[in-house]
Length: 556
Image (cartoon, rainbow, N blue to C red; front, side, top):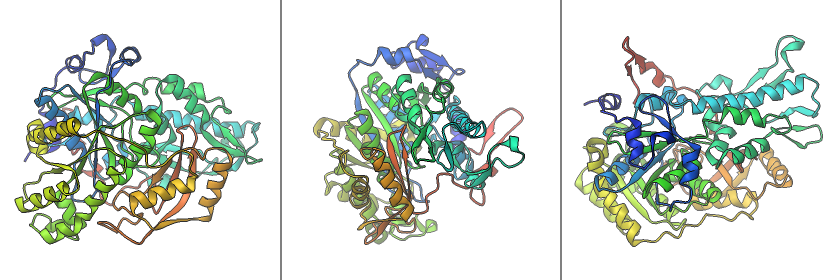
């Protein structure tokens, strides 16, 4: 069996101008990064802004398991399947982070015959967007520490610096550090922290900004610290906005690549606020909607995380109205939720399936709360049996969902045609009545409680004293109208990753809260989630190499 990277390397790619032509984009509107990657020009985005919108289809999933779900694979295969049916479609995906690529997996481009290419480029430096974000973030950090060193005119309280440095690599030793050690000229000694680049507020701002003017407005609002009077100090106060925007000028432009079957894919932005958003930028999604009749986009991890943020943050902020949701599951993952070990997932086990399907049930219920029609798809494995898939199909139909098997990993677009047909039928027959879960005027505590109870199924919320104190300060600063961005483990509906299936009788434990004033939301950190993950005992990096001819192996 060929590996994902072998399949990708054997692909016959079209020149990116030919892929762009499918969407009516001429070469003058492309900024080429070699033959197979390009950025879309600001002029193009401005020119198409009055085009009618296509249909917006979100792909999300049940809670991730070691058995794998294949959300990106389904997104890519569904886009290819629309092409097989003669439909004008585009895929809108997030960019992978280097940290996870070298840490827990070798890449994030889909899999099998449902991949976006060039796969190696996408999983490594791509067009440099994340490097630009890292530089902009750390420029602000440098200006902040330099301001303190050069007399501290703003009266910044070094005990209340909240801006963190970032790096696009998982590195646990950087979570908590001390800077400024050495001589008097080496800066002021203080505690500092790193987050992974994709968890930075700059990433969130890039994902939510509509244009350069909006980007600069958001950058200027970033709160970096508090002064001795307890008042916020912003990036604008530090005169950092212009320079940061200059570093992000090209990163703001969406990237265009292709699938193995040459379906256009706009890939831009990434997870933000914590590692669980996994959605592309507003700019990419909105541009895609103007260029195609059908846009397939993706939200990270389980629907309790990615989809909730897509609806309650991205759609709320950008005025997007999704037309349908595809919910991805696998027989294997459902059996894992039913208590079967990873080694035994290939054996038919209807009892375990019935026990574990409650996870799928909860996600269906959650998505229906937003008023968007749901299509459930099973990412097919050879070990799945007809008895198992028939049971799941019946289960979904009883809950008002369309159902389709997807065999895109093995067959590419052809294997996604049944799913595409079900999605098309849903778009034609079922109207979306999209609504957000909570209104802006609720208190922050009420918003947190709404998500915890309605989406996670919790009985209530408990707060660490520091978190409660910070909620009070954020409210007093006038940010209570912001939505909440919940940082939680992806592996469970609860904040305890060991609780599989559909946990009951639990509380969500909030240990930290902070405002991302530039992005426009309040981050709520629950349980043991980390914004700077560490590497596992055997990082994926161990298996990655490049030969004398420049051929990369080990990405998957």
